[in-house]
Image (tube, rainbow, N blue to C red):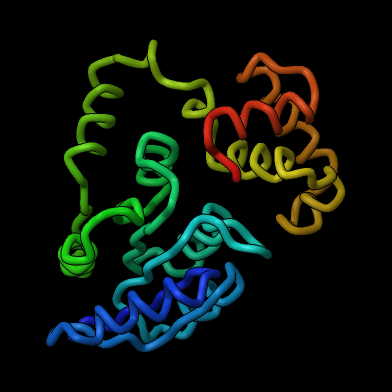
Length: 211
């Protein structure tokens, strides 16, 4: 029996997915949550085999939650189920420890297949993501957006700045010093060839990284 946890801030998504998975003979949904904090608490509980995690959540993004969970529960399989297309986040999050990445528009049967795959300790790679990974390995980075070159911490800081958070608030939420966050901000601006926080917001919206 594969024990599954679902974290998504939309109740209708959680309910529908939970009902579908519960109808599978080899799944048992043991926990549901709506925030990054819920995700971390569920992971710490140690009763999950697979955590299905959304990216857009009110208190903490799925990217932040992924980083925190990977630090504390490195062996937990985490399947990202997001409304963002694969091209926006998939390769970055796989590099940062996600076990798989699916767009919410996929067929429910594919979600079940992905959960079974990652529960075995393997990665679940869709054909679309495989193509993105292959492009990166073959050096086809000329067409890749600059944000894919950001490190995990840089990406976290970038997305928080793009959504209007101050350096001080980011430092508090990420348990970093203001000086460290400011350094990350400077690196992000340099890598993206931008100048201001407003530029970061515009870039993120233009590239579909925030809603």
